[in-house]
Image (cartoon, rainbow, N blue to C red):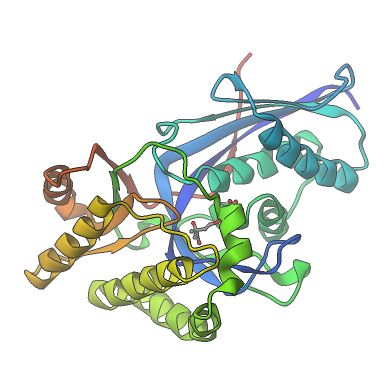
Length: 328
Ligand code: DP6
């Protein structure tokens, strides 16, 4: 095989029904299914080149050589691709996010989605979307949801074969926008990877997981019917349940800052005053505030006036992971 390259671009995604905890930590088989929305414009672009002249895999992220732990995670992933394709060459991986580094936007989802497409294409594998999603899941659970476009469901599945994500509505189905109130740009102390492993230590996790099929059904229906009030209730409940599990794990995890709670209360007040708006919070302090496209300017302005908010990123509903042509 000659030197062969490919470049993939993938969006980040925000979970409306959260993934927290694994039944199988090695295979990233989740304790419950999840639903997310791709975030347009918050993208990772990754070029993979398998090269017979390389003596080891190489990885750069945002024009810097990657840390040994990031390189090790990518190397394990490339080994899977090499095994699937029957090749042995090492690869150079060049990856960059177009959203501010350290803005608290999970980059592992867009990173492993873009890497999955670029690496398989560079290795001349043509995978079906479901198989690409399964492969991305092995790199980072939430990455499987960035492979299809629009609003996406990841079915928990029984095993490696049937745990993958698929689109439940295209990007133009509903003009929702995620206004991300950025509070902190510091890296979090406990990664999602470590957090998933702690989920079962909370006595609340079993109840959260047992009720997940109901929440998934309510969320699916609210999306299908574009019912914002129903969506708000289930999205906020689901986020609160995940943070209740985090707070009651051993050791306990507190991802919020004081301003996080202030925003949650404000958003509740705005909705009671008639503004269609709701919140969800991932494994970090920043708050994702969902609203209709028509209300973005007003919501972003209100968020910027809350002490502690440094800036607000805005993302509409994004498309699927795709290849781009590089002109050399
Ligand atoms: C809180 O799939 O990002 O964002 O890649 O192993 O770090 P690692 O985990 P990841 O965990 C996502 C956790 C979450 C909820 C969600 O996105 O569903």
